[in-house]
Amino acid sequence: MLEENASDGDLNFTNGSLVVIDDRATETGQRMVSRLKTVKGEWFLNILFGLDYRNVIWPKQVSTQARDAHIQTQALLSAGKAAKILKYKTTEDTANRSLSVEMDIQDADVIIDNISIGL
Image (cartoon, rainbow, N blue to C red; front, side):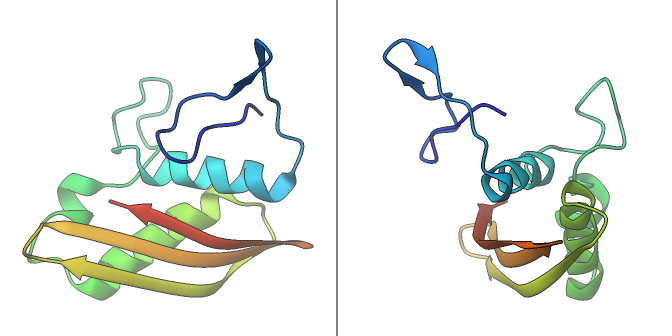
Protein backbone atom coordinates (compact mmCIF):
# COMPACT_ATOMS: atom_id res chain seq x y z
CA MET A 1 0.00 0.00 0.00
CA LEU A 2 1.25 3.51 -0.76
CA GLU A 3 1.72 6.13 1.96
CA GLU A 4 -0.63 9.12 2.01
CA ASN A 5 0.08 12.52 3.45
CA ALA A 6 -2.25 12.78 6.46
CA SER A 7 -2.93 16.49 5.97
CA ASP A 8 -4.05 16.49 2.34
CA GLY A 9 -4.36 12.86 1.20
CA ASP A 10 -1.65 13.19 -1.47
CA LEU A 11 0.85 10.37 -1.99
CA ASN A 12 4.21 10.78 -0.28
CA PHE A 13 7.41 10.79 -2.30
CA THR A 14 10.88 10.46 -0.74
CA ASN A 15 13.92 11.03 -2.96
CA GLY A 16 11.68 10.75 -6.03
CA SER A 17 10.22 7.36 -5.01
CA LEU A 18 6.79 6.52 -3.68
CA VAL A 19 6.80 5.52 -0.02
CA VAL A 20 5.26 2.07 0.49
CA ILE A 21 3.54 1.18 3.76
CA ASP A 22 4.18 -2.20 5.31
CA ASP A 23 2.47 -1.41 8.62
CA ARG A 24 -0.83 -3.31 8.86
CA ALA A 25 -2.46 -0.81 11.22
CA THR A 26 -1.72 2.13 8.89
CA GLU A 27 -2.87 0.17 5.86
CA THR A 28 -6.17 -0.81 7.52
CA GLY A 29 -6.70 2.75 8.76
CA GLN A 30 -6.21 4.15 5.26
CA ARG A 31 -8.59 1.59 3.79
CA MET A 32 -11.19 2.53 6.41
CA VAL A 33 -10.89 6.29 5.85
CA SER A 34 -11.14 5.75 2.10
CA ARG A 35 -14.34 3.72 2.49
CA LEU A 36 -15.93 6.18 4.93
CA LYS A 37 -15.18 9.20 2.74
CA THR A 38 -16.62 7.56 -0.40
CA VAL A 39 -20.27 8.14 -1.24
CA LYS A 40 -22.13 4.89 -1.92
CA GLY A 41 -22.56 4.54 -5.68
CA GLU A 42 -19.61 6.82 -6.46
CA TRP A 43 -17.09 4.08 -7.27
CA PHE A 44 -18.04 2.50 -10.60
CA LEU A 45 -16.34 -0.83 -9.86
CA ASN A 46 -18.50 -1.43 -6.77
CA ILE A 47 -21.57 0.77 -6.36
CA LEU A 48 -22.18 -0.67 -2.87
CA PHE A 49 -18.79 0.58 -1.61
CA GLY A 50 -18.88 3.55 0.77
CA LEU A 51 -21.29 5.32 3.09
CA ASP A 52 -24.89 5.89 2.10
CA TYR A 53 -24.73 9.65 2.61
CA ARG A 54 -27.97 10.36 0.72
CA ASN A 55 -30.20 8.02 2.72
CA VAL A 56 -28.46 7.47 6.07
CA ILE A 57 -25.87 10.15 6.89
CA TRP A 58 -27.36 13.47 5.65
CA PRO A 59 -31.15 13.19 6.21
CA LYS A 60 -32.46 14.75 9.44
CA GLN A 61 -35.17 12.09 9.88
CA VAL A 62 -32.61 9.28 10.31
CA SER A 63 -31.85 8.46 13.95
CA THR A 64 -28.39 8.88 15.43
CA GLN A 65 -28.38 5.17 16.26
CA ALA A 66 -29.09 4.17 12.64
CA ARG A 67 -26.43 6.56 11.34
CA ASP A 68 -23.82 5.30 13.83
CA ALA A 69 -24.66 1.65 13.10
CA HIS A 70 -24.16 2.29 9.36
CA ILE A 71 -20.80 4.02 9.92
CA GLN A 72 -19.59 1.25 12.26
CA THR A 73 -20.66 -1.48 9.82
CA GLN A 74 -18.78 0.16 6.96
CA ALA A 75 -15.70 0.65 9.16
CA LEU A 76 -15.70 -3.03 10.11
CA LEU A 77 -16.06 -4.05 6.45
CA SER A 78 -12.78 -2.21 5.81
CA ALA A 79 -11.00 -4.05 8.60
CA GLY A 80 -10.42 -7.80 8.85
CA LYS A 81 -12.97 -10.49 9.61
CA ALA A 82 -12.00 -10.59 13.29
CA ALA A 83 -12.26 -6.81 13.80
CA LYS A 84 -14.16 -5.14 16.62
CA ILE A 85 -14.71 -1.54 17.64
CA LEU A 86 -13.08 -0.65 20.95
CA LYS A 87 -14.07 3.02 21.11
CA TYR A 88 -16.53 5.03 19.02
CA LYS A 89 -17.60 8.65 19.26
CA THR A 90 -19.35 11.03 16.89
CA THR A 91 -19.52 14.79 17.23
CA GLU A 92 -22.19 16.63 15.29
CA ASP A 93 -21.81 20.34 14.63
CA THR A 94 -25.18 21.48 13.28
CA ALA A 95 -24.08 25.11 12.93
CA ASN A 96 -21.29 24.15 10.51
CA ARG A 97 -23.17 21.11 9.14
CA SER A 98 -20.34 18.72 9.90
CA LEU A 99 -19.95 15.33 11.52
CA SER A 100 -16.71 13.93 12.89
CA VAL A 101 -16.08 10.32 13.83
CA GLU A 102 -13.39 9.05 16.17
CA MET A 103 -12.79 5.36 16.79
CA ASP A 104 -10.33 2.71 17.84
CA ILE A 105 -10.56 -0.68 16.16
CA GLN A 106 -8.90 -3.99 16.92
CA ASP A 107 -8.20 -6.14 13.89
CA ALA A 108 -6.98 -9.56 15.07
CA ASP A 109 -3.70 -8.74 16.83
CA VAL A 110 -3.42 -5.10 15.66
CA ILE A 111 -5.07 -2.11 17.35
CA ILE A 112 -5.76 0.89 15.14
CA ASP A 113 -5.90 3.92 17.44
CA ASN A 114 -7.29 7.37 16.93
CA ILE A 115 -9.00 7.04 13.58
CA SER A 116 -10.47 10.50 13.09
CA ILE A 117 -12.62 11.35 10.09
CA GLY A 118 -14.56 14.48 9.20
CA LEU A 119 -17.65 13.60 7.18
